[in-house]
Image 1 (tube, rainbow, N blue to C red):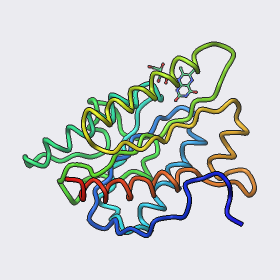
Image 2: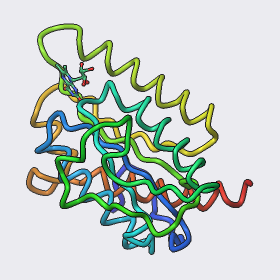
Image 3: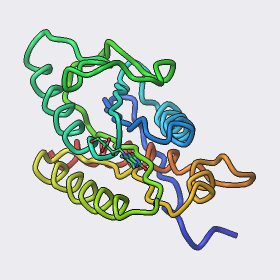
Image 4: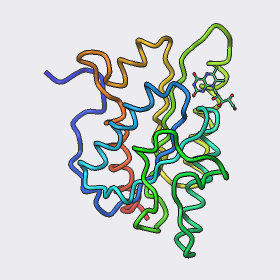
Length: 196
Ligand code: DLZ
């Protein structure tokens, strides 16, 4: 029987023409890594070419809105110039720690069809979690509406590590939410082209 929760039946969409950007935080890397893997797995299974997936990282979730905004606007500039965009270009920052999952030298120079923000916020003893979760959520929505590029919300806001592991497909029998984020990016990327 289908689960009550979740995104419903997967759409069978062709992502082969899409270019997708991913920005992930490095905080809670052991959770981020499987989420990133799950996201890429669905993108590739939907036909997105590996060379058209650009992955960059930032220190923590707080930095996701500015990074997604900059990554997208850099891809718009790139589409009208000969400059290249790869891991490490972002905000003049450093190369992703998860370099084995990162893709540089994207084949396409078109603006991204969708951008996926991935972060994991785990509640601690202070109000830090509440401030970051709310600000980052609003920030990502603002970037999405201001730029017009679909920005997939891959921010886990969990109360403890067990909840995080259960949403990253790490706990036995659990589902990797990254797979849903990849599917959402393909669906919204295809729809964005139809809406244009
Ligand atoms: C400082 C901090 C804390 C305490 N917790 C998290 C977290 O659970 N998840 C996350 O992605 N980032 C965390 N950060 C880092 C902030 O997001 C940010 O990177 C720093 O405050 C620097 O701006």
